[in-house]
Structures are given as structure tokens and as C-alpha cells.
Image (cartoon, rainbow, N blue to C red; front, side):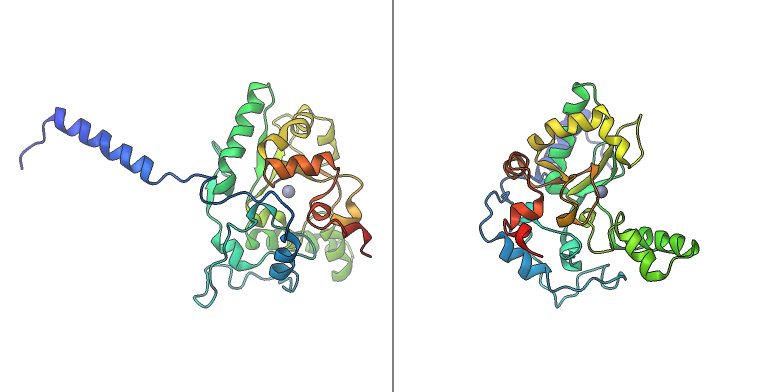
Length: 268
Ligand SMILES: [Zn+2]
């Protein structure tokens, strides 16, 4: 076989890699607009998620069944509500495209990857080392985390019911964790990697609190909102909602539930 001369082969290779890079590139903004108004959000969320039962197994979690049409993830994707009474469904999880965060094993929804990487890069410039210790979590992983803790509490003499209730106050039941969306992150710092209230005292938290909204994130579980969120304050847990919504949520001191449905507080 005749050899291709180097001066022809090198430009061909360069062209090949250029095309590969640009044809496979995805962008965040042009295909999937970030929803910035509250209009119809509650209806959308309620119709999609309130009637679903929480399932403590991972059936159907592997692939879409052909009978289930793919959800249109572009609709309000940044404002999806997942909490104790709004479980996520398998169809949503199966349709998320996950990508790893720079120099990390953690995965996020590809639509927020640039925002996460930018936040990590900018914090570093300010001398703050943010470490993402948890991004996307599968139903299987959440089930394992939840059940392991329940068993631990039962081994200490609690009934199953009491053990599940105790566990749920700090480990979300499977299908009710925001980590299933790929839009939530647990962030620590190398000098403080424990997920407890001590993280409030770190420079990493101070930086996050002051800056995360610029990248579209909110500190999701704040003190004073436990009645609504049913989650104790978690200074390490941030959730992507888009910069405009994040700013509005912070300025009005609301939690996501209140922002999506201003009547939340009036409900029993
Ligand atoms: Zn978290």
C-alpha cells in the first residue's frame, strides 16, 4: 500500500479532529431555553409528578419502555421540583444526558455542565477550593443509601417505620432526591469534607452563598424552611435553576417550593 506523505496526512488529521470536535459539540442555550417565569410551572409540575407513587425499588429504571414517549425535557427543565411529595419518574431520569464535571467522577445534566465548571474555575481564582462530592445519583444508589441507614437504625432497636422516618429526615427516600435530576450538587472543600452544619463556618460556604446565584444555583435547603421542604438546613447542597430564577429566589428569601407556588405557605 502506498504511504500518504506527511504533509498531506497531518492537515487531513487536523481537519478530521476539527470536524469531530465541532460536530459533536452541544450548547446549553440555543436548544433548551431556561424557563424564567413562573407561569404554568405549578400546573406542569403537578400534572407530571404529584400522582406518582414513591417506589422503593428500581424497576424500569434501566431503559425506556417503548410504550413511554420521551418527555420534552426542554419544558421548564431548570425548575423541575423533586421533593418528598413530588417524586421524579423513571422516564425523566432515563432521558437525562449526563456528563462528568471537570477532573471529577461526578456527573451532572449536560445542560448545566458549563455553569458548574465556570463556578469551580472562578472560585479557584478567588482562592476557594470547591469540591463536588455528589452530583447525579441513580435510584439504585439512593435506594442503597436509604436502606443501609434504615437497617443501621433497626439494628439499634428501632421499628422499621421509625427507622424509615428517622432516615428520611436526612437521606431522601428513593425517587424524592434532587440528586436524581442531575441538577443538584453537594459541595465541600478539601479542608472540610463532612456534610454537617460545620460547613456553614467555612470560606467555601461564604463564597457559595455570595456567588452561586451568578451561575444559576441556589442554596436549596435553608434554615427556617424545614416545614415546607421537610429537609434540615444543608449548606452544602446547591441546585441549578438558572441565574434569573436563582436571583429572584435569593432576593425574596423563598425556597424553591414557595417560588413555584406562592400559596405553599398557606397550605396545611
Ligand atoms: Zn445533596
